[in-house]
Image 1 (cartoon, helix red, strand yellow):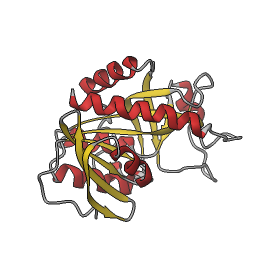
Image 2 (cartoon, one colour):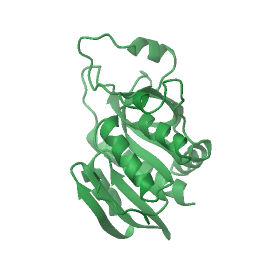
Image 3 (spheres, one colour):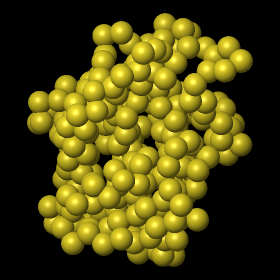
Image 4 (cartoon, helix red, strand yellow):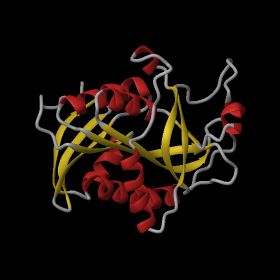
Length: 231
């Protein structure tokens, strides 16, 4: 689906949802080249401070993202950090706050067909600590906690356990992380996720994220993630 080579990619990768964001991120790399492009999947390889890395987009939603993650691992990637945006589940965390995932709720709509629901979706602890170190070095103090990976963007007719997860301390909501964590654990790879909150969850109104603020913080988070996987 991605059009990647059968092997030989760098072992470390940053993944993002938006192909345009992947293109912007690739501009940070030395000697960046486009490896493949198909549908929502855009992949680059290049050098960050002397280390070879991959930057790839995976689109929106866990089923399609899981395809990307599987093919990246097949092509030689062994360490993946998802850098993205998320909606806040806490009133004290607004747009521009940084959330560092420790684990994810597997409500992604796909991994229950990959492994039983009792199998955990947890981040690699060494990567979490490396990310935290690099974020703090940029004066970004992350909130660590559990992320809700949910298949549905906005609630419709079926009641969702929003208040239950909020009461249980879930920090933020997004749509792909748990699929990455389950796959990585099952295949012996390392994975983690770090997010810039762009406002309240999509369930709340009004939703008016500060695009300039989110973009500014996201740039710093991306650099922190690149340092975390290469140092």
